[in-house]
Amino acid sequence: MNKWCVAVIVATGMSAAASAQTALPPPETTDPVALGLMQGFPPPADKAVTLANTLRYPNPRWAFHHLRELGPTVNVWRGAQAPSEFAAAPRKLDDLAFADDKGATISFADWQKTTYTDGLLVLHKGKIVYEKLYVGMTAEQPHVLWSMTKSFTGLLAAMLIHEGKLDPNARIAQYLPELADSGFGDATLQQVLDMTTGVQYHEDYTDPKSELFQYVMATGLIPPPAAYGGPRSVLDFLKSVKKEGEHGAGFQYKSVDTEVVGWVLQRVTGKSFAELVSEKIWRNIGAEQDAFVWLDPRGADVTSIGLSATLRDLARVGEMLRHDGRVGERQVVAKAVIDDIRKGGDRDKFKASGQQLRFGYSYHDQWWIPHDADGTFEAKGLNGQHLHINPAAELVIVKLSSHPAGNTLVTHAVDRAAFAAIAKALR
Image 1 (cartoon, rainbow, N blue to C red):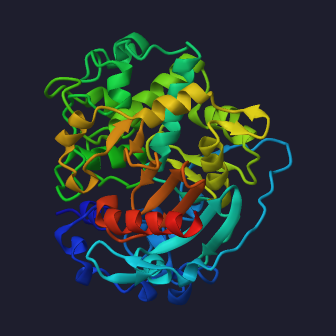
Image 2 (cartoon, rainbow, N blue to C red):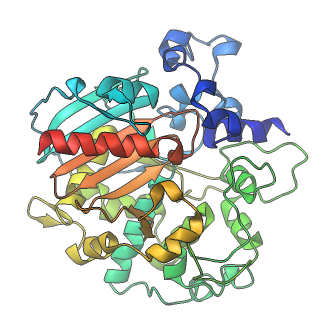
């Protein structure tokens, strides 16, 4: 197996070894500050983090909040206005304990430690009740969101559909003639948004032959081997994806679907993804810091896994969504858009994914919908990124992490148990 395959599997996948908790490195041994990663000028060769070794553990514990130092990015401007302020109402959540997925009692602190938390922020009724940062991360540093980016892309698409600028039933080829002969050409925009396309792409982190690895190399996040002859940009990779099966048959998680949506957004508006996030979201939530987006080797915004943002600004997004799209007197996102996202997708189609741990979920407009009693909805990302919104409990949780096993299913049950325990404690 090539070294680049190993790097991606270890950092972003759930390999057989990583899925066993005993195989995971003790969290306290992976602290980049204690390990001296990127300290000194220049840092020693064995302590240097580069794009070539970014995903080689424990380097992600430093790299995930320093990504813009390792490759090309573009700012998501926060605007010229003063940032909104959070009131503080601290609660002693560190004293909280709850049953984990195995039925054992786990403390709030140990949950954070064993899930390799980099930052955690809890808002209740719009006030900060808990905020912690780890592994040398500071409040002003944007942390990579990985697939939480998808939910921003889906939100923008849903907004443009509401505005009448996009037709969810239109075929992708109508917007992107370049993809007419690809597997996406005859899929509808809504099928792409809900990841029910039938294309030859498998997001299998444990299989080095999976198309996932070609996609990651096309983003530029993993340098391809010298002899690699495949696509070297996201747009070129999308053109190469073939059809496999029928569109609309069932949900299968595919990052490439999101990249198609991102291309449609930019084609229809004539603006980059970074500009759209800034114009429609970031400038309107009172953001404190610019966010940023990773650029592929062609200079195109990576709209599936490319966004990075700070803990507090993500909390501002969550609070806006909890308030049905409002920030103060400003309606940032139409309530009808939020309502449509929260209603979710087809739960029977979701079963096609085989994600038994998420039984009862659906996926709609790039958002995860649990269909639980509290009406929660979620954005999720590789290696433990979470934006959890609980309208019934008036709760927003942002958790940013650098877990060695990237697949969020590895910690899904314990994370959901923790979120439920927080909600119960704060009601």
